[in-house]
Image 1 (cartoon, rainbow, N blue to C red):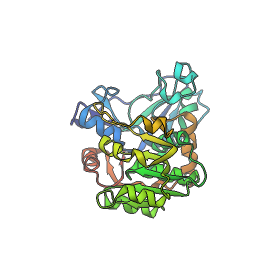
Image 2: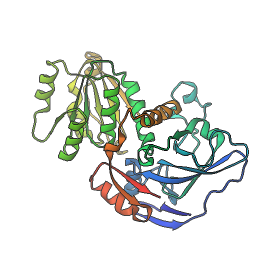
Image 3: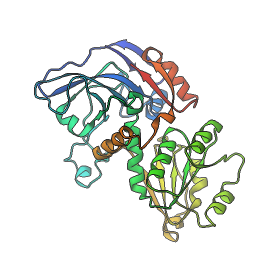
Length: 340
């Protein structure tokens, strides 16, 4: 099969590799139709990643069609459209037992990444990590189930309540997904700070109050919108520590700050500990998702509760994946998908 093989920073090549095949009666073979590019793919391509040792096939946000199943498979049939989680938790390690399976130490993975023609999983994997996609749902949209699940995980931890005021720093694809889910949870006002005009427009079209941090005084803006109290939840969806430090005081006493997404490994953050002590602000982080959140994300897309199509701006064939990566690196567009 053809696959985009990562062979080290800056090295991504379409190669012919051995395709996974059904070898056991409980196995499922999925023909990948669409795989979206994630920020983690870009970070790995540019700088490497401890979890992806080259040579390796990247890609983990995808949807496709079941093309072959073993005789003992009952969870799906040949011809079904599905999206597959890029990992499932073991259910036995300390973190699974403590109720945070997204931090599982012994995750299970599909046969390979999704920038390839085929992916294989087992039925036991599918029980936690597969979701059926109705025929009327675009597979490009279904491929965004995994990033939506990551956002649900973060918003769950924020515990947004009806009428809360939420501020989101960054209107990239993940910031915009946070906006959509926060709306669904009942936030009465969502303020989005974003440098790029095109992204501010998307956030505004989705119903957010937008601000350009290069032109407007964020502190005065937030004070006016919240009658001086500050926002209930602050979601930082950028990986810039200087930006993060500059917005921490925008949250009200007793509010929550969510660090969404990963910062470079060498990053450090300076903050006033009295933010937590006297103002009782909670600092939160979020990574990954649970099987339940993956299923929830699929249901939201399948039933039109989250319109992820607004985020998909570009599509490339697999053989042009380097062009797709270059576009993403240049911060052009929003979600970029690769057709396999």
